[in-house]
Length: 115
Image (cartoon, one colour):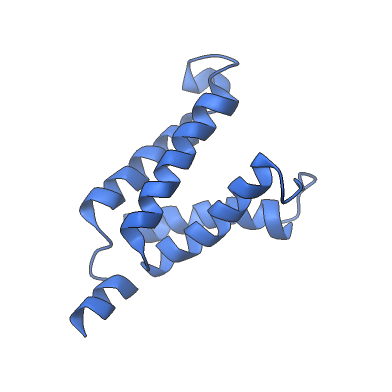
């Protein structure tokens, strides 16, 4: 359940940046750091939601969130409660946990492994 719920919420961040859904004023160019991040959030989030290629995707997304924290949040203030980076830290460690623990039984990875 942790993989599914966190991936669903994470996917919404990507769909907002890439597809403007839910509607937002923030529409980064695709060839920018925010655009690439949004693409990773959208595609990686969907893959995690389905539980497909779970471990490599979770590893990449964990690293992306660590980079996001140190590049965009920490320069303003190191405290996550003051710099707005608490979600980035949480996603980083949730995805790191998913990388170590695996996709779980409710995943396409598990279904493919059974075959």
